Image (cartoon, rainbow, N blue to C red; front, side, top):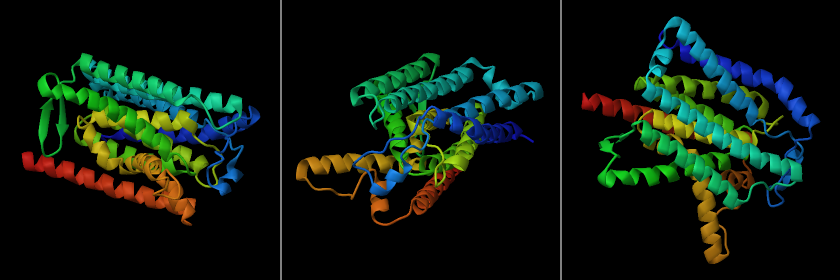
Length: 344
């Protein structure tokens, strides 16, 4: 079976993440690492106060163990994952993406830790968080440039040289892309099971696209992420027994960005990750409009809270947002296959 390594990665991540819940959640309760709730948030969220947070470490552990297991299996079987990672370029792309995601997760962990210790829904200041995120993003992109990334592909437009001339504008845009999407995923994590469910669909789409372009390192990493998200949903679906915290949401953001770069065409994340973008833009629009008019466009931002305050249940929002992600993901896959067919 050609893709057995990806299957092993997915099941390993699911098993590790879901089983860790029996250990990590009681431990977080013991440490009293409970979630605090914003006073300006929906009043019915008060019932979630004290739910263990920082559960994102379960996702991170699931992905890391799954990747290690998949590497071992592929090395023994002489599979494509192991073979591809023997190439220095592919290894550098894989490791830099994983390290970037871990770096984002570490920033989230620090933010969560400060919140828990101070017992209030504040952590790193906006300036501190922005600096650290931009630093990690810049180091990741510098690594890509240094190991030899010279082009990027825009579907139906073609391959663009990003190593000289006007193509160099790609790098500052990419910096905002990495930073922006990481924070957009973070904003999506506001309801039981929302970020994990949406990212489960996103990672499955990226797994298929990476496989289509024979990026087996991306294929396996995406499968591991999908499995970890599924394992976390077991504990995070309503009523949530644990929250991922910024530890998890920022790691997820780093991973989906890194996986989009693994496809060689990161721009596809704009379509696949449409929910992330919608969440982020709803906040930007709300803030900008309120500053100008002192009125609000949405009842509350991010937009998932708007639908909550319109009477939608959390389960309905998670379902609808996941279905929208599925539709845009299928659309992206169809466009990629169509483009590839037309070019042949």
